Every structure is written in C-alpha cells, then in structure tokens.
Length: 235
Image (cartoon, rainbow, N blue to C red; front, side, top):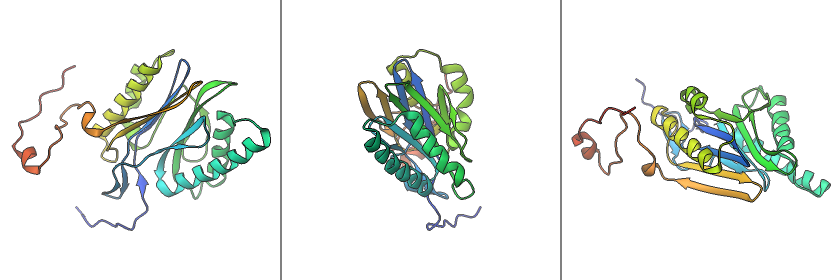
C-alpha cells in the first residue's frame, strides 16, 4: 500500500451531511473531518454554513468548491434581501445554488443540502447533489457517509417528529456514519431552524454513542493495545 501522502492535494470533505424536517422547522447536521487523501487536514471544521438569517447549507465534496458556491450565494441573497426589503425564502436560496451548480457542473465537485424556515412555506429541505439537480425532500443525506445511512433513515424517519426527536435522529445518524466511514469523524454539529430563530449545538466526539466494534477513547496507543476485545453489539 502506498503511504505517500500528497499534502498539497485539494482538501476534500469526505463527509456526512444530513437535513431533516420536523413539525415546525428543520434540523441540519454534519461531522467535522476534512481530509486530503489519507491525511486529516482539519478534524473540527464547520460544514454547516449560514447563507441568511433563516437559511443554512451543509457542504460536502471539494471544500474549495463548496465554500466558493456558498460565498457567491450569500452575496446574491444579501442583494436580494435589500431589493425586496424582506428575507429570502428557502426555495430562492436553493434555486440560486442549483443555478450555480448546474451551470458549472463540469468544474464543481460538491454536493449541498439547503435547509431553513420562512413564513411562506415553513421548514424546507432541498438536496442539490453533483450535477445541479434540485430535489425537495422531507429528509436528505449526503457525503461519503450517506452510503451507510439510507436503510437506517428508511426505518427511523417519520412524519411529524418533534424538535428533540429530529435532533436525536440526526446526531445518531452522524455517529453511525462516523463509526463506518473512514472519511467522516470528529465532532457532530447541528443547526435547528424554526420560527423562533436558529440554535446551534455541539456534540464532542468522545461523548457520542459507540457502535459495533468501536473502541472507547484512549489517551495512549498502549492503552488501545492492552484493552480487551469489544463486547458484541446488543440488538
């Protein structure tokens, strides 16, 4: 196996991003690992970016591409708000991202999830994967860790969840992806958006639930080598 790491390679957010609607708003969640090949360039990055006071976007794929799209859209939405004299809707923000992603699909390598709340349609989630398709969904998952989560969401997601149920679902899903996906890791960040405003929450990696064959956090490699084998997972 070639262990030569190109530290000058583009930063990629092999990642897990999630957006979930609930009865009254939306919850966005993401891990925090940014990688350059096998090297973790940033273990505590923030992949949930503010576009307006009421709209946020979860970023995956190329870190540079997703940041550039977010910066452009934030600028356009600011001009839009000044011209109309009122905040932009979630649909307007999602359509701007769709327009940029589709028109530059041969150059961009980023998948995004837009979530927010507005007075016209309430809480909305839009997925914009590679290529610039715009899909309105009750929940959306993206990034390399999403491969492990489709079946889980088919079973766990339900209509009319409360805010706490939706946030617990997002945190559990991201921790499951971190357990299986080598490109996801670090901490879990969530953003809750509803009619009352925006709430950011932070869940440290050593406080997340451990899953099958995961080891307890250790201070030393010797502690890991001397630790007993993990117990089988209880169903």
